[in-house]
Length: 227
Image (cartoon, one colour):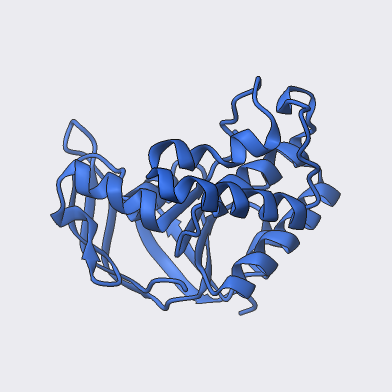
């Protein structure tokens, strides 16, 4: 089940102290699919990293359920990410020499022995649902669409309550991108997860419940994807 997000007085600054992002208040309901759009350099990825507790020089409150990430030390934020957040990156970040299943099961390497089998099982299930055959073949020869599907399976394998996606369709052709986002949103909705997807792609936004627009580090609009 997804987690609700409650942000208040969030600021992220560069090492020079220049303000990169300012979000005075924002709430996202558990189980929502939210898109984030805006021009390049506007602060979209900074917002996503702040939601994951990865933004440096961040202050304020970023609360997922009862957990305030910014109030925790780095070890606590890392532990929360491992247990509750799955991340999908534009550049896939796969290990070329590993198979699809080995890549998708990587979270198990950082979890307890008891959980490793469960993570591997969920990774295999996600690969099957995403149409990826997971034999011995390494991902080195995979297409961009196949690689992103492996990355999505990896993000889902630990059964996170939250998915954070950074330009998940940017490296894909139109047909591949449309098929991938349809499958991703279906999986997220079926499992009741909360998803925030940063994207320049209008086709991604059309499938969201809500779209936030960020310009110059501030939210300038927030409403229905079809408004």
